[in-house]
Length: 349
Image 1: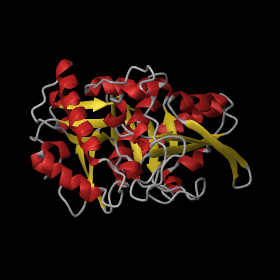
Image 2: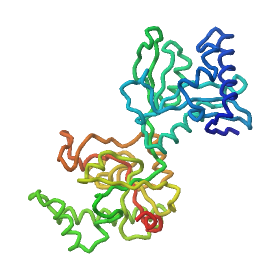
Image 3: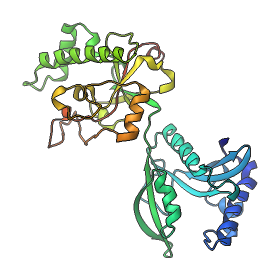
Image 4: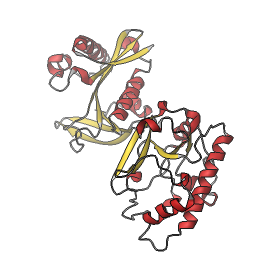
């Protein structure tokens, strides 16, 4: 059983023990990396606090460690503090090799990233250690270049995008109220709202837009019921799975609410792989399995695992800056979530 915990000062001897085990093995196999004096706490404490380290235990025995910091001006000088997490001093004791401990530590690091709303994990390693680089690449890190530090060390740079599939995000106008759904209003009231949105666009067809919106929300509900969903609301409240920069441009003064997915009864949350306006448009269907369908949480995670996230070209809704090659409504943009119950929402209103 693997358990991972954040180190405290009482764990400093454990950190030194794990790192020394790695140093001794590397020296014995002719692959020296760190000197023994570089992994004493007297030296490490110049760059790290004890709480920067994660320690992995196997069946209660310390087996691996890794430092995680939010600033690395030496190797990544262009990254502002708090905009990324950086991995250092990853080490696994030889009696625990092959148990998947680096992957477990990386997974915990990604959870920490999500909790801090940081969306990239970075590290560096010896440019010439192909086996070590392979470990990182198999763990989802992408080569991002190379550089020389201190004029003597050739290092390879790696990045790993961190996606948040643990939270639903709802964007809204800060001066207004969250969780409002256009199609839950009577048509006349919805029409007044839409005309206020698009007052400057004289060519905008409000009736066509509204009829399509009511039709799509009805279809969402029917499709979700057909796969075993239990929608309670007539019209859903819209969220995205994970954050989405483009969504914040839909508002003059954007605000958002982030809700952990585990708070919801997942029988009352559906998903489309993309903006439902696009994903349910039969004219856009190019044959992939996500067109014209809704999914439960487990199945949409499977889609993300197999295909990655939907294509999301840069745009700015309020400034009317859009892709040149197609209409923004023809782009999938995000994984959309539809909440069909007020039970959780009422706690956040």
